[in-house]
Length: 457
Image 1 (cartoon, rainbow, N blue to C red):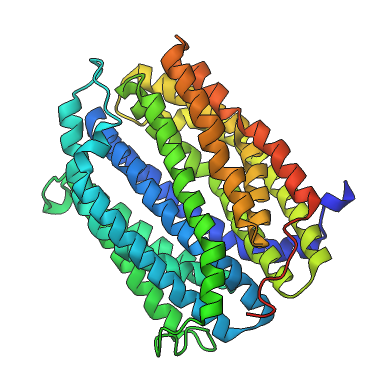
Image 2 (image 1 turned 180 degrees about the horizontal axis):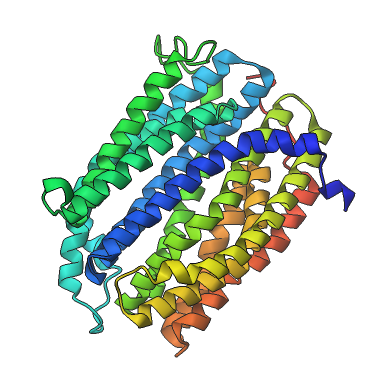
């Protein structure tokens, strides 16, 4: 048991890294919830249309994360090695990957909007499908312009975090979410003499806030003295050997995140076959759960930074010790967060202007998510531990392959072949994370992830 509890200095070190990330994500998720509530106050069709588009954009966001994560493994280890040139090479690679993903996403979403959105709209008499599709397309059109700024911003933010400069991304995110919140109030509801734009106003507010965030982070990052960004644009050189390593380690992570985010969307699409009310309830549940799961997501980032740095410095035993303590810490923290989530979720659900049936369904989903949250935290910690040592193929099997081979087939079978109500169906699918806990524990315990990848880079 003592092996899972760190010293005071250990937790101070971890929290110095994790707290700014938590604050950033906490503010972002809180304002995201307020945005969702504002759209939810307009009507169920508007809320459902925006929710469907956000399901599709979720895949893009996670693909950006996955595309940069492989490079981030090297970034953390180069930082541990104090290799400035290596950090610059990694940053240049990130810019190329993020730009490519953004352009591809824009083309796919622009061309296939009707078909992709239509996958989530099942007409069972619960709502106006045609009207929901219209609102979704209106929202998507403006959101497409925000994809490239988001991708470039993430290149800067992730590199700053990997070098333990987590405060600047937090400030940038705070500026963005405050701007987004104020503009949402003005543009969605037509305050201060502005036109009442509804879902279009929500999209425009997001676009403006992301552009401002990008401008702030780029300018501020380049003003920092003694940063690896000095001279980074003098060339776009990336040594061939390192580029090969980045592609070998990074591609499985990109494919993994694309497949995992696709699995989440596919799972929600399965649930949506039970009707538009389920789509609306899932949207409410996701918004509320994001208000609480930022803890284990932030601590996952801390694991990647702390353990990656120790591996890069060749401190293998220290890395194993830190990983065990951080996974335990994340799991315990989320046990408390799950209790808090259950206690306050009813308060947030009642703010939505929708039917009582949808509110009740959403609350049930929230309670189920809260119960499994500590197990999700454990899995998340295992994932980032394996990833910090470059075991990207194993994380691919652990994460997305598990989802497509186990979770999606189970959900499809239950939806199509059984008369189960959506509540027990959702609970069964959510509880499959317990299987992953066993697999994750075995993989981390074996120590197969303990390696230094940048000695010869």
